[in-house]
Length: 180
Image (cartoon, rainbow, N blue to C red; front, side, top):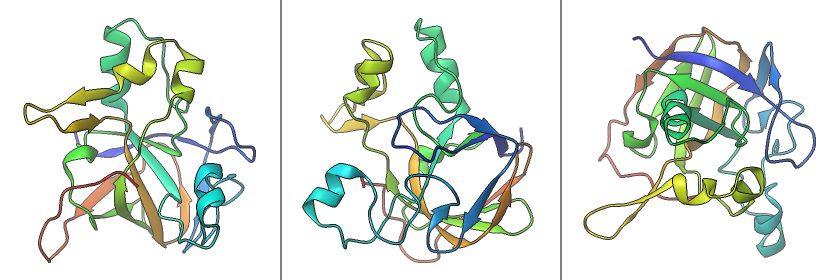
């Protein structure tokens, strides 16, 4: 299956879940227009408390729909937008992409992957046990974070379900994603 957008979401309030929309508009250097996390500097409340002037590396959150399939197979009633992503994808292994990968979405949008989403305990407020279900452990003891990737907007525009996604890997050394 060719990589594409399954659903798009935004919320003007700081809520875990984000309702689905027919489309979202990404603004260069800021994020999703109308979303609480839109801005050039950090918007996540715990990060604002540490340093409100640090750059916002979490402008757009993407999750692969295959995660929802995995979680549903384990008995978790999850659906797109429920765990806070702006863009739900299919057909692309987001977690294996290197830092700096460009995703071209539709005809005009480009986002640059900055790192992994670090899941938080609020997930257990949605469904008890969900936090543990989205974490894994590598054989070397490293934590696997399954809750998607964070990105910044390089080129803005409208994103809709069914938009195709093209992956452009960085030309430099491929560095593994770290939590941001």
